[in-house]
Length: 51
Image 1 (tube, rainbow, N blue to C red):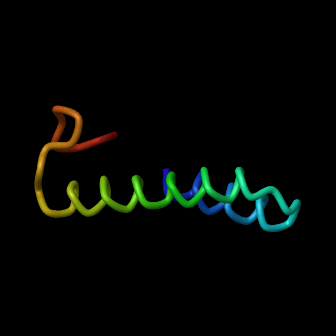
Image 2 (image 1 turned 90 degrees about the vertical axis):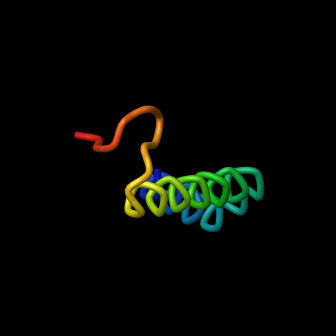
């Protein structure tokens, strides 16, 4: 989700689409939160490890 967020932010900035940039920032933040929860050992979505 972090990679998708970065791609959307870059595309939003290149094409001047603020909506795309906003969605990218939201995806980036959600991905970072999920990554931090997973790194701390908390179960995310009912799973401890995602394969």
